[in-house]
Amino acid sequence: MPLPRRTVLGAALATVAATVTGCDDAADPVWGGGPDPTGTAPADQVLGSAPAASPSASASGGGLAGRLTTALRRYLAPTPENPKHPGYAGAVALVAVNGTVTAQVAVGDALRYTAGPVELSPAQRVAMRPDSIFDLASITKVYTALLVLQQVDRGKMDLAAPVVEYLPEFDGPGKAAITVSMLLAHTGGLPVGAKVSGLSTPAERRAAVLTTPLIPGAVPGTVFRYSSVGLMVLAQAVERITGQPLDQAVRNGITGPLGLRDTGFTPLQWLGATDRATRLVATDARSSRGLLRGVVHDDVANALGGIAGHAGVFATAKDVAVIGQLLLNGGQYGGKRILAEATVRRMLANVNPGLPAVDAERPERTSTHGLGVELNQPWFMGRLSSPATFGHTGFTGTSLVVHPGRRLVLVLLTNRAHPNWTWANPDHPRVAVANLLG
Image (cartoon, rainbow, N blue to C red; front, side):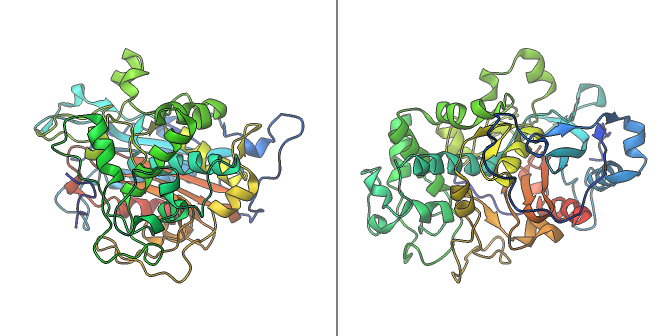
């Protein structure tokens, strides 16, 4: 059954591109090592690519790329678990081991429907590409968490400090007890979404986020309840401390140092006309907001101008994989350190031991969570799940899974919200792809 919406308010022709070098299952150390004294990144710290295999070779079923292609194509049509609609119009999967891309495939369409939704003719569709740019939805929370932890490294934020110390406007009954760590761990007692509809100015909407009340009866720090509001609040704290708007903070703190040219908010502002036409992946195509392509899918993030701490980042699979590799390397990538190794260790440790979890949409979900990342969650990690496995999902059909023991990064980006997010449960393909590697 499709999942309920978290925010407030047919068989496609496959296009395949792949790289194949094989997948190493050997166990490796959790970390990539300390800072590189030479300033040159070790080989396992840079996502290199193997020579591309031909589409016909990739689709033949040989090797990891072939198996991924077969698995992903299955969801381009209805399946027994989702009999009325395809699971998505298209998808990109990338696997990296020891910092090297061992397989990358793209299937289906980045754009298949126009507003209505109305299915486009094959000639009007836009094929999915390995470098297609997706709305990452809640994977944005990982970027916000990185910014928060950078401020912790610099001594400008304290994980144990009440959030109100940084944002006095974050007030209301019970909220003085909410710490920075609680918001990163989703134990602050805040609801999933903020009520910003009907407010006419950006300032009013931002203020409404900060004044969002606790869930009735919630006691901060005692129960895991997934909350987008918590990361919206932390984004405003980062802005207050750095004196930079969130999009600039992401550029200066993450994407700039890491060389991620295909990652950012509001991509219509930084992509050229050709890239907008050929690389942007569509989401919703219903008539209420029209076709969404390059415009954030999340309603609250849209109301906040497309830039928010919980949703709004767009990126390619390779750029998302860099974030996974960065954390796998203990906070550095390509010779650039953006987080202290000790901070990354803290980020990737379970900060909710023994706490109950409340999630009506995913009753199998546990409270196991780090500071901004999910830990050991089989509902999307499948057989890759382990006590050390970390990652995150996005409502639009995106996911990142990192298995430290195997030095493995898996990125699966789909447009399951195109043309209508109610058509399919994104967890089926997530688990199927993870199980190929598990």
